[in-house]
Length: 409
Figure 1 (cartoon, helix red, strand yellow):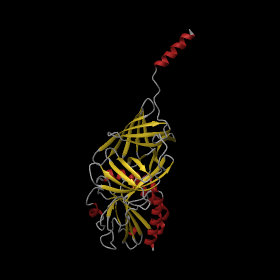
Figure 2 (figure 1 turned 90 degrees about the vertical axis):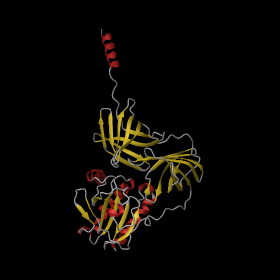
Figure 3 (figure 1 turned 45 degrees about the horizontal axis):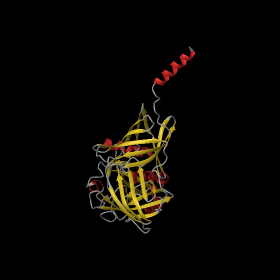
Figure 4 (figure 1 turned 30 degrees about the vertical axis):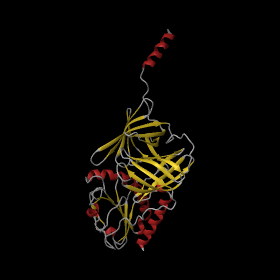
């Protein structure tokens, strides 16, 4: 009788439902699967924090914290801290995730298939020892599919064994933290930060030539590139791209802050002070990097007689939608200086005339305007070399502090 009872218990257990899969902690490998077959690979790490799951997205030296995660049954919903995008996924029987990465644009949502696998630390599978070392500077020409127009950038890479870290520098900013491998004679690099979702592949023809380059930015776009190694390559001076129409021009603007109250550069708090005016947007990864730097700098140096004002050019002129998007920047980086909404989109061809008609133009985001204590514009700096650029970020900080010293004299 006892033996029969054990058999019955075992049978009932065998017929029971399988345990639900868990969103496990540890290393994960994520894939954004484009319809054209492109596979944008990135890595993230899941951990527990005070009873809640958090994620760190890993790109070379960056670990981006994502702490807005909801688990509802088998569903895992992950909202990125910036750029108005999110993952809508479900746990599979093997513990993997499948779903969509959704970007909320101004006029529509776009999405791409997302899959992620636990317990995988590698980014790209390596089959062969690297035949070449690509460390150095690489002037690069990108050509968009279907056009003859090309754009110029400088690739900067550091390689150790098969592993490569680096970025591309442009006149309006950098491509942030790229991570990848050299597999035999093939280069593979990728990044993901909630806005940038990039994959680069190229054939390394010899020590100084990259050919057959393919650049997959985002969900559908495609470009091609070639590069030649050249340690003397330089970009155009970032202060030569935009300026003021008249020497010694004085800025004059007034826009609402996040509380709806108007703030003007003519207000009493800015008089007889050096003022840094940051032109930015919550959709802009380089603006995120600059905001992180400026916020910390401002806390340490505001007593020197320096003010910072951020002017936001959001994807929509709608105040409430723009406010919601910008608040994530303000919260994450503990921004204590005024953040104003211009109500003008970055794609508006008349954005300069509508917001800062004293300038010759707004050539890119971020743009930083240096105003002296007399209210006159001294320098207009287009773009930002962030922490992903290594030595260039350090050079930027030195130049920034030199310019501030000049404004305060």
